Image (tube, rainbow, N blue to C red; front, top):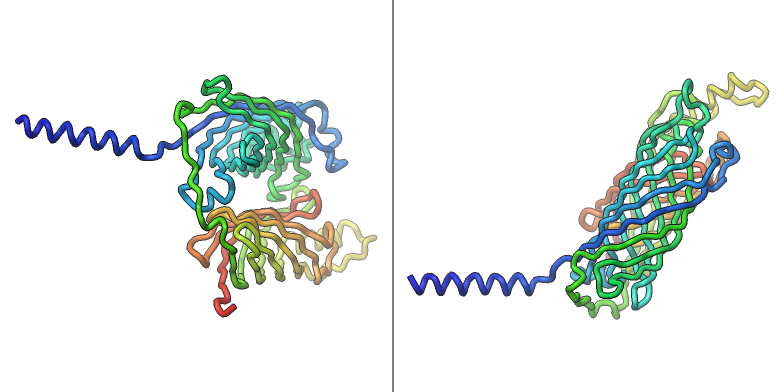
Length: 374
């Protein structure tokens, strides 16, 4: 019996020591108050800017310490989830409730300067309604896509307590990507101040450094084929929603562990344009629009891809080489992100825009093939 008891005590002691040796996960919470202004990016929303939006941003963050090599390369970012409430100070706009996933990126050795990037979905309490709310030309639907950025100075563990402070500037974007008209969108720039709470403030953590940081990264050219689709609507309110299709082929070249550049071409089959061409040819005979005008477009584009582990963030600028019908600008842009599954396959979500006007939210898949001979 004594031997069994001794063995049990030894086992419990070893288990307890093993648990102590495992690196504990560090979690923090923060709550920020926001006060700002709506940017007048489009003259059509001027009547909706009647006050200074206020809001609250609540966030959960998990710290990283370099267990994975990419964490060290990005100076050990946080990964988190955030919830926000925004009172847009206009009865026609109402309020927004948002859910995001985000990264906190830190600058310099002391890690006091933080850039947060968040992407998610929002619920608008008072979207456009032809009969009851026809002045809200910003939100044509209750469900919106939303992104936000924060640039904050952050100081954790004030006076050896779990509490800290942060403050800075941020911008939040609300839009439905022209899923449903109208959709002039809203951009809110805010000052913010907040309190942080560290659940593991008494523990000291060791950051893992990787020898690979000093090695030169080399990668061959890669060739991509991507297909994306979705549903959107033209600028004329009340016209039916239609599907669209995009096929793209492009080459990319990574010039480092973080960055890669793209060059390619793509074809757009946007069915809403076909309906809009037909509508405008009848409604505005003075424009002399041929109802049989081709609705397809062909674009060429250059882009940048920022690699963060298996996720990449995309920025692209394109030009319509084939542009039979004039819709918005001939120059277009794209913002989005990819998620790689293995080394070849990826899924993506993109927002295609013309200046400040969104055209579509694109959901797509693709394949990336590397040239191993170079």
